[in-house]
Image: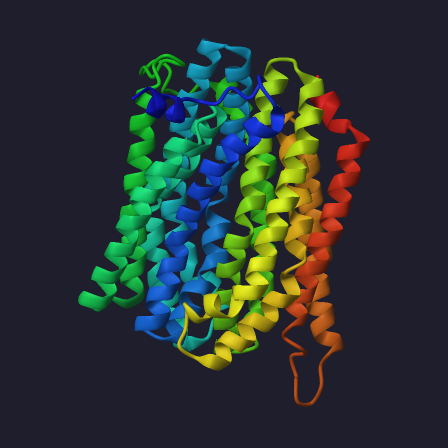
Length: 458
């Protein structure tokens, strides 16, 4: 019983060896992120195997629009995680209680907004993106169901950010594993047994995410030794709400701009036809797993920096940044090697079409080295955010995705046009992504070394 209590107890990252605390916090979160990725991955596998390649393309084409409209969740979650970690490190119970209460209020507001705006914008955006007619209705149906059930997604994503700020990455892992297993079962029941197709995988995802969101609420209600979950705290308080929004807004804006650039590039992707769209979906699904260590270390570094800034341990922040980044690079290098060796069987999970597997593997080889660069970018960006400097990572991301990636993608495709390839070479989309990752990592390292984030912390 004592072991379980210790496992689920919030991690105080202001004490002990930095690398050990970072790793202890990251591993459960990494496993949780893997479980979360299973939502979309299982959806893709089930529709690809049991419905067909066009259904797989439909689910993938819906991704950029979904990401664009859930940026509110990402922003609130980031702001919540930073403020919660700082107040937790400072041992300020009153401010912590107000912050968590306002997170719940903001989550409800964001859920209603996404539900209304998302369902209204879906089909016009898909038409604007030149989504092929063969998959347009499936894309629309899939997104409508996800947006109507957006509340579960909101409460899990935002409240898991609160739990991470408290140093509790294990609870979110357990809840996601439960929800992921439920999602897999419901996918198979709705698609294989009931023949619901794309609508079935969307409905399964909504139900599973609602369960994980409710479990997060239940967990927070039980942490009475850290803060107070009373009605007087769960109401709009301008100061605390604006603090969350101020710190989270750059992350939300960044994700919105990234999503917009993905939508613009998706239009280019769609011009290459259904098979390349399906291959792109497969690559992005594998990519999402390859990126998980980088995103997990980035989030861990945000919590680590936030807690130590709250405690006034600025030298410890720099020490942890070096150790955490080294860990992220090492793990990312191992995963990159595994993808290159076992990539073909991984691609084969999504489709029965051999040509599609080969095309996907060719694109994956282009991206492989970029994951190590992203380990540097995510880790050091996490440190800067945790210290309160959320603007620098925002501007770097905007430069990386808008100024670099989009012009590179369109420019390289334009320059490689031939009579046989009127739209250019399709692999240019992935070369442009690789170049933007590497350049973004170099810029991030330079800004971290410059030290502006230290002045923000003070």
